[in-house]
Amino acid sequence: MKDLIDLDDWETAEIEAVYRLTDMLKTDPGRFRGALSNQTLLMLFAKPSTRTRVSFEAGTTSLGGHAIYFEQGQSQMARGEALNDTAIVLSRYADGIMARLFEHDSMVALAEYAAVPVINGLTDLLHPCQALADFYTLREKNIEGPLAYVGDGNNVAHSLMQAGAKLGREVRIATPEGYEPDPEIRDRVATADVHITNDPVEAVDGAVAVYTDVFVSMGEEEDKKADFEGFQVTPELMDHTDDGVFMHCLPAHRGEEVHPDVMDGPQSIVYDEAENRMHVQNAILLRLLGASE
Ligand code: CP
Ligand code: NVA
Image (cartoon, rainbow, N blue to C red; front, side, top):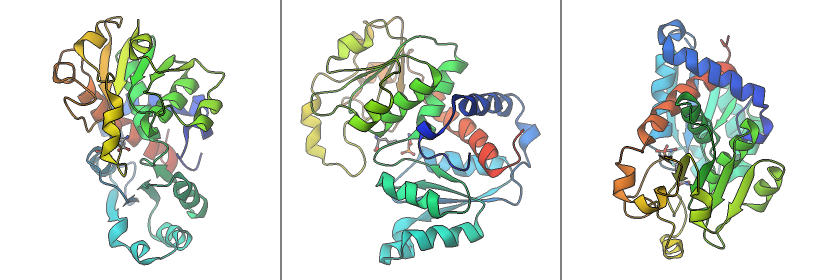
């Protein structure tokens, strides 16, 4: 594999190889200390970030490489330089590119023109690194059973559907009417154990994990929030689960998509998920930028 753009392009075996490498990275980090020495990761951001930026930068450092934070708004792209020229030129300097962009088609084009591996750090459509870290976290904790996502049928929901399909996990998605996942993504997982509903209770009934994300994603209008009444993950909703854990990609908005008692309660594993972003991404960097086992 050259890139990580869309989990549909990845074989299950590749995900499992990333997970085995992540296990090794977590148990014996010293073994990988110089694995990316003299390699540079270019991190191109068109949207804000806390976790993606810092986990990729710190992760690259821990592997002996160097990461450059490159804000699209401060680049010549902001003055109209073509994406293909940018991709070709950046490939002459860096060994890999991680990008967070608006349009998914731009990410696909970036990967097409870049001569080096490109990792999708989120688009309006997908967030594959997040979903890989999330299912790794469940695997690490030996949590088996249905995952229920409650909220907006967004980029995170799409990648959870795809990752769940690849890994043979049951994924249930509950959204308000009109906020269902993208029909193309739904079609692509049509034969998998992925179910869509407009009823949060139906989705979480007997689930082992309840997941939510912001109601308003980066670049969207705030007035959307009014449509999400009844979709907050509350202690009462969690009562319908099978002793389920609570998951969130973060950033979280307490009192909107999640009740503070759930977010900060004993069932919350959100900080383990956030930490695993770095470990799983380190494994992805090793697989794509070379030096892998
Ligand atoms: N979950 C996630 O991608 O967080 P950031 O937006 O902070 O990178
Ligand atoms: N759906 C959110 C995820 C943030 C990590 C967004 O796109 O803003």
